[in-house]
Image 1: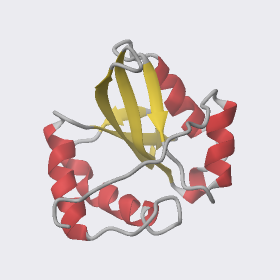
Image 2: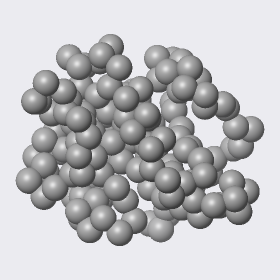
Image 3: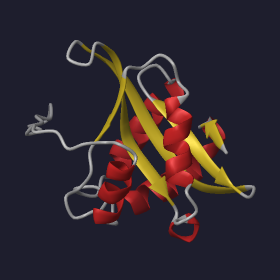
Length: 145
């Protein structure tokens, strides 16, 4: 049901990533140039774990996780950076099953993620799984700025 992304998944990953970044689940669309650079990071597998979600022998989605050390959490936090399930596979519990799969990973002390405020369906799912809102303001500064 969940397997590591391989080089052979590039085209299907790009297709799903384009949908993810244009459907309102992410703040803004990204360019294929950025997607290509990130793809190299996924395939390297040093900083990022990429997964393909399968259902009934078909590719149903993908997920990206990023481990990082956190003193606040007392160990390694697994950041769920992206989780996408194709529309035709939604409502089958695949996201819940993916989080159950992540719970089996023993090298982490916490799971963390973010959601767009208008993505109520995702927020409701995450809250039902025990995630809680954090009182942080997230900030970012890109190198090109």
